[in-house]
Image 1 (cartoon, rainbow, N blue to C red):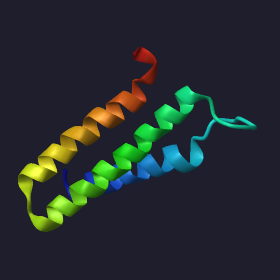
Image 2 (image 1 turned 60 degrees about the horizontal axis):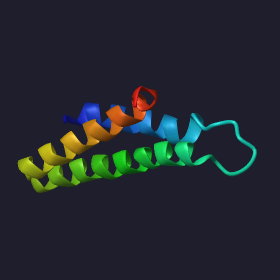
Image 3 (image 1 turned 30 degrees about the vertical axis):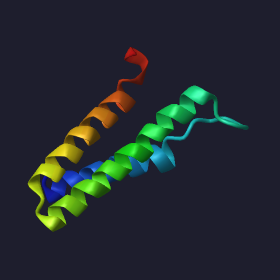
Length: 81
C-alpha cells in the first residue's frame, strides 16, 4: 500500500468512526458494536502497515495489508453475511 492509499484509507476510517455513527439514544445493539469493532481492527492493521513500511519489512506489510483488506471488506459487506 503506498502513502496516498494509506492516507485515503485513514480518511475513510475516520469518517466511519467519527461521522457515520448510528442515531441511537442509548447503548448500541450488539450487532452494531461488533461492526464498529471491525473499524478498530482495521485501524490497528493500517497502523501496522505503516510500522512495517518504516521497518522496511515487506512480508509484515503484505500480511497486514491482507488483514486490513479482509477486515474492511467484512465491514462494508456486513449485510451480505
